[in-house]
Length: 125
Image (cartoon, rainbow, N blue to C red; front, side, top):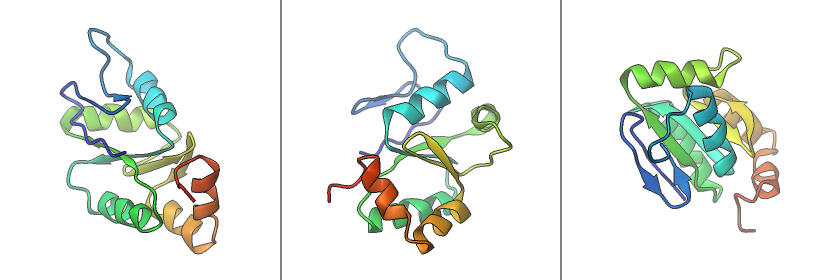
């Protein structure tokens, strides 16, 4: 499942709700909810080449990430809500922060990416 959302608008694709109808969510609550709703989530700025590489690597191993593309001021709010000094793009697998492209590549090169994706139900095999 892949959802792409502009944080400024309200969108719903599949079971992922970007902005619940009529509800105002704090950025930290929204990030937490989005991470819980999907086994693999990437938060990125619109047009980020590193997020594109992350998405391609995940697809190559058989996982389809939910990608949340952020624009403008919403990107700064969401980035701050990620906490821990996290920067965009930011990958979460099974609700756990992996980091950015370097974190994903580290998991992949160490041979721990595919088992982790299987563990969280992001791979069929």
